[in-house]
Image 1: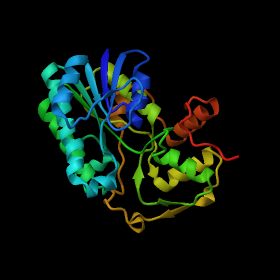
Image 2: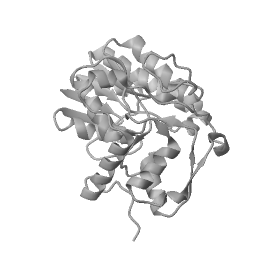
Image 3: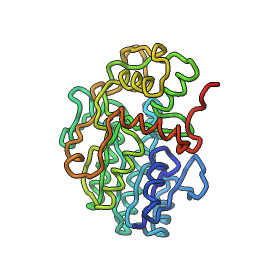
Image 4: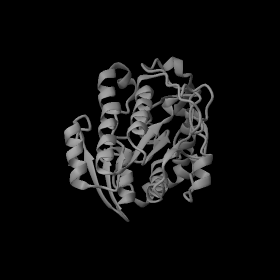
Length: 301
């Protein structure tokens, strides 16, 4: 297949590009973070999106481009809308014009966190700007295309140079002896990025359509996840203290009992969706083998 990954310079996009490139012809784009081999693209520029899709003529466009920083989005609503909604709409319209399928990465922030974990059939009710805009983006895709796949995921983790995801940041903090306050009341499914990429690869290859929850099989609090990270990486768990979300005074409200039911994916996919412990052990193993290509936090001497 000929695949275009929009946002391949990001964490999820980069892992997907690595996985899909082994068997398919894959092109990727970047916006703010330039990386070798990627083409520059700002999804807010409708004409540029259309020109690139026409140039590549992919079978499928995988859209991982987003402004994912929830608190930033809360205070910069116009910018979030331009990237997360209008940017997605631009990609969807280009796909429709040139007959490409589209895969879009979404989130459990579509929900209010009162009744999780959520199935594909629960009615969304976002409580922050980021969640509202991702829901609008899903709507724009559904209005524009018939050949689309929306993959909702949550708490994605693994090695990345910027150490933005929760697991990589936790390993870095604990190795540095830095205390951490971690929410004890936020629930979700920790999702190992490589496992997410494997499941998405299967769905892309079988041309899956509609909405799928693709997440780890374990359901836990952020505190439980942090303690498991400390256990697997043999780090000092006493540096971790559980707090309630309210005490963190975050700018955007968080859905507390979020996360997903993944019965549909388990039923339809061959890919085994990993538990929290399985994923963390693979993350640790990749570090021990050096497969993370320098993206891991440095160990203390």
